[in-house]
Structures are given as C-alpha cells and as structure tokens.
Image (tube, rainbow, N blue to C red):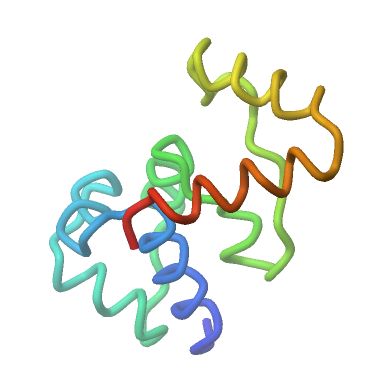
Length: 107
C-alpha cells in the first residue's frame, strides 16, 4: 500500500463525515489502526474493507483511484427517490440543486 491509498481512505472517511473512531468501528478496528491505514503504513484485511464498503465507503476508489457507482441496495427508498427526481431535472436546475446542497451541507 502506498500513501495514495491512505489519502483516498481518509478522503472517503471525510466524505461520509466520519471520525477515525467512527470508521474504525464500522471496520472493526480501533481508531489508532484506522490512523495507520490512512497513513498508508499498514494494509487492512479484507474483512475490514468489506465492512467499510457496507458502511458506504467506495472501496474501488480507495484501491484504484477510480470512482464507482453506489450499489442501489445501499440507498434508502428516500435517497433513491431524490436521485430519480434529480435526474429528471435539466442541467441548469441540477446545477442549482448542487449549489443549494453545497451551501447547506456540513464540511
């Protein structure tokens, strides 16, 4: 593993608004192990990667630097409906929605 793996793992953690303790808990490790993974100095085990994937981390991105689509089974019915409505909007309205969300979302 290299530093870019750790940087992408940290980026995903922050995207999900999680602390190292939070993501470590999802993955079944302590916060100090999470920190070591984010520094890229130790490789996580497959069960950790599986668990954080189930928690919403884009593992494909963390491993390859290429984004993947979020599996639909990880979306709630409400999230699916929001995406459906968003996709039905024109480009200008989608940009307006993106600006509104960025102005009200934390971090």
